[in-house]
Length: 231
Image 1 (cartoon, rainbow, N blue to C red):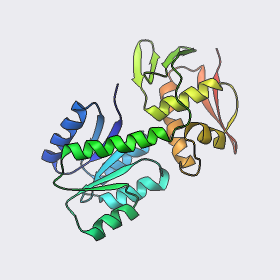
Image 2: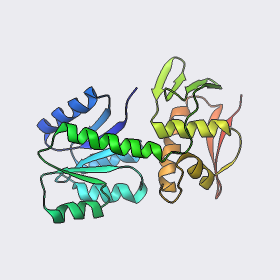
Image 3: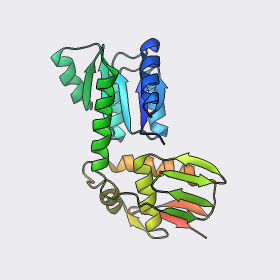
């Protein structure tokens, strides 16, 4: 099971190869992009636990990319990796939405330590832990402990928050849930976590569940969501 899903954006292919290899050896799942526009497309359609961004990127620089990410996801940790080392650069990076700023050249140990700190902090903010149980609903089997959704012997690993969200929806299946209640139950602080970001998580779960027409997540206008399980 992956320790976390990382979006890594870097145009130095040699550095990126070494960094990705080291992160994957340590158990992380890494999606890599060489430019800012490709990264923006990735994060608009995928769920990640953390973003690692170079600053000097082609097509869209890392600072601009961070601002765009923050416009729809206020929660995801963003770490800048850059050769720009002045105090002013660091302050500016944090003002653009970054959570930390690592100057090149850097050690992989420092990067991994910071990743672990952010992921641990993110998990502490989750109030509801996924319960240690196997849940069968319609054609699916869901293991909250291993964060795995299974259909016809095909396994799909979920991120920590996806697993918590699905657990909560299943616990209240066929009931209308208010957006604020979902935010408070799953993320613990609806002011910290952007409700627009929650929609991205819902969209991700919908894609995972769409193989079974008896299961769907309905949007209830001006209220929230309902997980419908017909059998």
